[in-house]
Length: 151
Image (tube, rainbow, N blue to C red; front, side, top):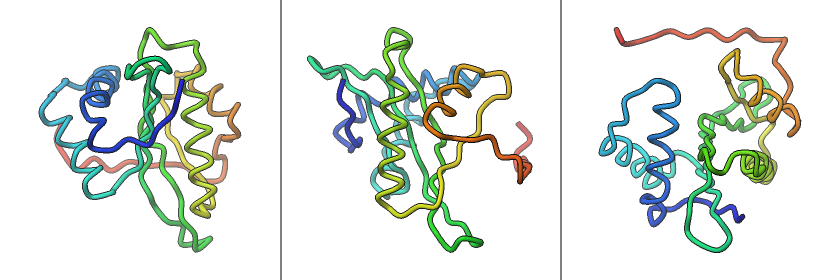
């Protein structure tokens, strides 16, 4: 397996995984809008996307997408791990681990103070994977969400 930073040339490989990620969380696929969303993020350099590819072919195994943010308290960059998804036939192959290690290295190389991730409260497999990479549950701050749509 190889991990590459996604570019516009990877959209055809990346979009189906992104659609499956959205469907996993109960969203409709919207293939055209999904592709456009990814294309816009890449064109504007608004996110960093890592793609796990099979060694012997251009088959996408998984991806993760990180968005930059900043910490006013530490005066440093923070990376938000917004998406991570592994194709069903690639699970148990340590794809998520490799993606997370790559993201962690990138965050360190940009002098970030931390990476943040949110996960469904019942997704124990993801929690264990995050913890194995070094993530710790935040016990200092509680997160709140303000929905801005009627959905």
